[in-house]
Image (cartoon, rainbow, N blue to C red; front, side):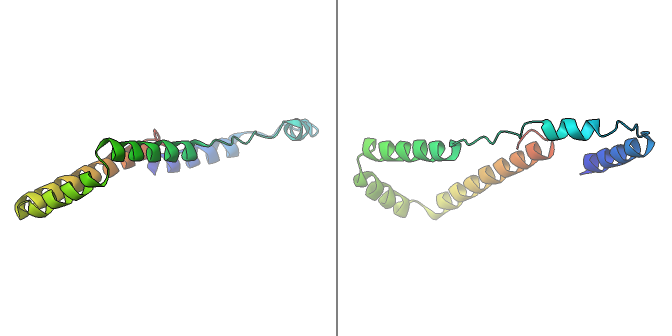
Amino acid sequence: MEENVQEDLLDARLRDEAAYIDDAGFTLRVVQQLPARPVRRTHRAAILLGVALAACVAAYFLAGGSWFIAEETTRMAMMPITLMWVCAAAATVLVMAGGVFAALLKTRGRLR
């Protein structure tokens, strides 16, 4: 955020100090003749969702279908409670670390 404040101050100062040179509307005519920025229509989200769905379906069938789900549910029910807490805490730490990492990248301008 401090970078934005510095950029705004620098921009304001440059605007204040720059002397206007009358060009008889030349700049305005050039800007109006520039082509409009092309709109990129990517289907990235649909492709990623499709690939993720296909991977889930493939994993389901490769793991033995619904039998895998029933077996793992039974295994989770028989797991000691302390191990469940450890697994939950580890998952929480991993998700939080990923969020912090993404936030740091975004503040540094590397993530859009």
